[in-house]
Length: 252
Image (cartoon, rainbow, N blue to C red; front, side, top):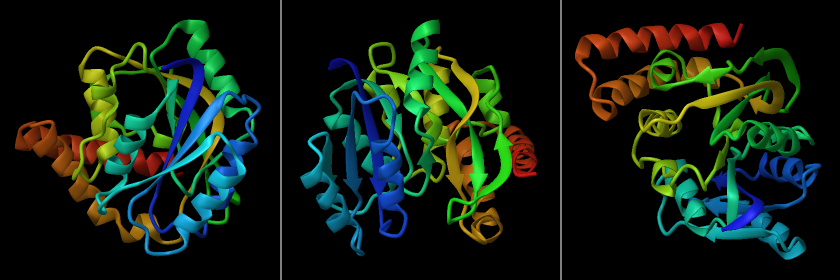
């Protein structure tokens, strides 16, 4: 594990349309001591060719490939297995970072000696055009806070691997809300997440994606609470309602 090095992991699946702009947003970071791991989850488009072009051009960009399709959790976990940096950050393959994202967030993490941080993010459409709606990061989030609101987007996170073991950073495979399940896994083990209220990530939403998948999202939340967190039926239903309402408010 190399001190001060940030490992950035992008899980890739059929992302050829958006992947170049996401990678370019990492390449433009003002903080330059990073490695980028592109992990392909058996894409059927030209994502692999794009990944390999960047790997050939940049010494700190590396490609890895899942043997079979298993979802973003599997891809992120494979990336963690190959991570060399003390610090770990995730980016979804259609999101963007502003140029000083890593610099500002790493400064914030180190100044306060935090293990788990996240930032505010700005909503945009699929073409990365801003909607001028910002989801603001609360000061501190614990396990019970996460039950009520999925306030942490994967692309906003930064972890110190010297403080949080990789076994807690590994995401459960086969879970619909693998990111939320991981934040709960970490906070349930005594860590808090600390928010930097600066919109350093651009969260791109595809047209119709939220409305079209809202039933699927609700089912995913139910499975997270009832099957993964093993809460009672009543508590699971309560948190599904509370969490869904919080998601609606973030988008207003």
